Amino acid sequence: MRPPTWSCAVQASAARCSGGATEFARGCHDELLLVRTIPTRRHRHALVTPSHCRSRTPALRAIRNGVAKATRRPALQARPRIPWRTVRLITGGVRMITVSRSRRAAIQTAAAAIRASCQNDGRSVEQTAVTICAALPEVRPLEAWRLALGWPRSRTITRIGELYRSRGLLPPGLSQSMLCRWEHQATEWPGPEYAEALCTVYRARPAQLGLDRVAGRDRAGWSQATGYSESGPDACVLPVPESMVTMTTSAGLPAVRDSLHLALLADPAGSPAVVDLAEAAIEHYALGYSKHPPHVLFTEVHGARGLLSQALTSGQTLDPIAVDLRRGIGWLSALLGNLAFHLGDHTGARAHLATAATYGDRSGDAHLTAWAWGAQAMVARAAGQHTRAVAHAERGLASAPSGLPRAQLHAWALLPSLAELGREQEADAALATATRELEAEPAGWAPGRFGYDVAEHALHEAEAQRALGRMDRAAATAEASMNACTTGTPGWAAAALVLAQAEAEARPADAAQRALDVLARVPAVRLRSTARARLAQLQAALAPTHAAGVEDLSERVRTLPPAIDAHGVATTA
Image (cartoon, rainbow, N blue to C red; front, side):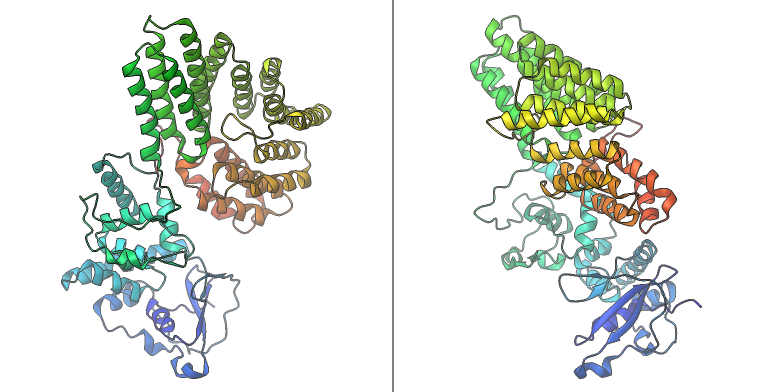
């Protein structure tokens, strides 16, 4: 027998019983079911009955008749015998589950009907949003306002991008998955900068969007700002804590390149000041590598390299300055190679890394040469060319300075390649050598793309252990790497996916859920080619198991937008 379904009006009525707790479950046909209402002594009269389903407005009648018709079963019937799971929200004390895709589609249809009805009645956007929230208890104010406008998420992102451009800024890295989390998850909130942008394009106050409280922190001062206009950059000024320094991809990256450009306008052939500024720019790009979408950073690094190339080819550059400019061009080429690899462009990566190695030799920078060959090993390994990867790694080790650079080459370039070839003893020896080099390094770990830290070291060890079939050791090491990273960063995603791969055979459901968590936390625009490859490998390994979450993971991986599409355009959302 098909389990009973309940209309949105029933759920809204139950939510109004402020003294009780409402429980929901997922039925076998993927509807959201109201299982029961547990009344308090004060509110026993508030039990849900079919009379609550009698809609009194055209909008609610449209929902009842067109989306989720209520049955006339008694309100106190037994709980349906169906599998279900709940997720407790941190706020409110209501136990609810993640709304299914079919239910989300029904919500979209219902919201469109409500909007049409409210427009016919001459109601405002705010009144329409309030009606949507009252009729559809799953919808929070931020989503309700967007639905009241009739906008898809892509239009919100486009309008925010236009707002930034009108202020002389590049569009931010806002994605549909980020907006989805802000709309649906009670523990996910936009920061002050995004909140201001949302209020401006929606022409709403923070309180109307449910943004007057962020992560339990009262921001009542936001509501005092009353002038939100789409064209005015000063329309909304949000309070920023004294300790907070706002820096965005839009503002920070172009400013660095502009500074380099200005220095070269003063000294077109280069100078010690230009060299110092070029080194500072390289350090800025390397330290902030994981903070920016790869295609955005690629554009900036490419522009900076072009500026140095113009100075080097001017014909008036002094020899000592020329050597330093070549070194800068080499390191920028190394960054471009790494970025091309993370965008899935392996041939472009090889070209940029070959340039980096050449300029490392020309400038006498052994570290640059060694790093470039290590990156070539990484690219070859991703293409399944493990023998070539070992050769590249050994060539890099031939010029690598002692200490951290040699440790990195052994663990990053050589160790995983040997493990993939099944050369267990040599892989163990490479790991031991890397450990000894690290112990002999007086400076310890170094941050940034050209540095090496404990999280990266543990990640490469975990990859090698998994390739050698040591799943328990791989899982433990991957978890250590994940714990050493900031949640949601590319390094965290890499460690989490390696951990999921190590768990796949023994705990397929856990592995699937872990991968889904990565997809929920990391926008597609920030998913590197390595993460995409691990997701595809994991999905293929889990497909025969039919464990919980595997089907959803397969669908998410299948519909994941490519880093670069067939027209050569990078994913921006």
